[in-house]
Length: 337
Length: 211
Image (cartoon, each protein chain N blue to C red):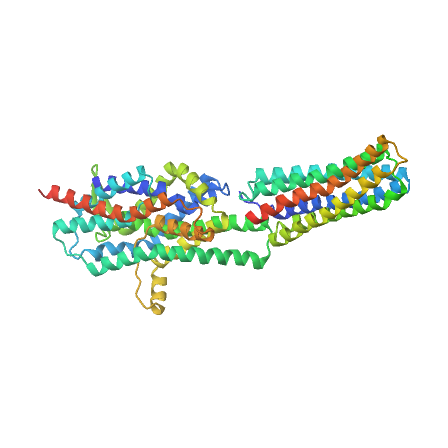
């Protein structure tokens, strides 16, 4: 029961926050009504989670070789919930997937579980690499979109119309791509237990992976519907300050990176060409968005970047995982006593 | 939810800019008719200018309302609205000038005719360049900047002619002070068209550089 409650809390928090990554620019610049954007968000987040969440979710099962007992999973989730709420209060975007992994590592240290350190190090490399990828890709996409509009010689009203359409269409695609990562971050930790029989208030509930992903994605949608309106408007207006073309470039960057690390087909295709192997893993949309914004800001020689705020966010990428790790270590140790 | 208004809006904006050009050309005709002392024709042209000016107002209001109500081009809405409002001052000024010629009928000496027409030509060139720049603002801002910089160059020429005209007016010993002041007023209101064009061009350069 406590697991379901914790999952629901995380899913609702994620829904409230991450809807802004997808439709923030469209709603903030009044190109799309909030209610319509939430409907699109819910529909595509559910599709994305059911179709693709299985791949990044497998990371959790592969990371810990002798996976913990399902009755102790709440010890991993509680630190994540606590740290996420604290970071929300401090208005710092946090990555749930990273928090879950570090909480799992902290838990495993105390419980003496075997950790697949090769996979863990690979995750760290890719987590460090994705913001750099986002930084470069956002610049490339921004230049590409501007070049296309220049070649097509469209007037500002035509550009406005095309951007509106693109923000809605690619917002839906981004929600689809994000669905896999968000759901994997929330319920991926349960992925080794594909068939769970839960007894909730005398009801027997048989959960398989698809039902679990559906359940989590619906809760994400609920979080977006109930609480994201204010965040979407605030974040949206911040994004729209960067103008619509860069907002579209940020959306393309999100889609590109999120799909690469969730779609089996793309991973197989890319692994043929790349000198290193990539694999499905849950990523943070907030980190990608932030790095993309910094990439766009490079056009103006970072004049619009607030140094204090930027340093705070970058530091949080180190402090949050360490905090979650320590909390998990502490909580599991106390529980063990 | 999402309608494509760009065609209707561009048609309205182009019509607005075309009307300014038409008013500009009509004023040249008016001035020629005035010097030829065809006052009936001057009245007709003044009426035509007034009608076109009212049309410009209606078009500008319609475009502004649609841009705001449909929340279009959010990032440069202010610049476009500012440009339209500033451009709309030009037909207003020309209409005022036409009415002044039509009602006050200043006594322009034959020696001044040539320079009055020259001043009108320069003001007219300023407007033509400005309209070209304004049209390009929606597609290529580099052209806008180039055209608007040319407006300043032509406006300087207009200033020189205006100064020359004032000198000629005040060195004429046959006219009384009232006539001289009256003629000076007409030089100033004609030069004002070029000045207004330069002001709008300066704003357009800033908007184009910003975006």
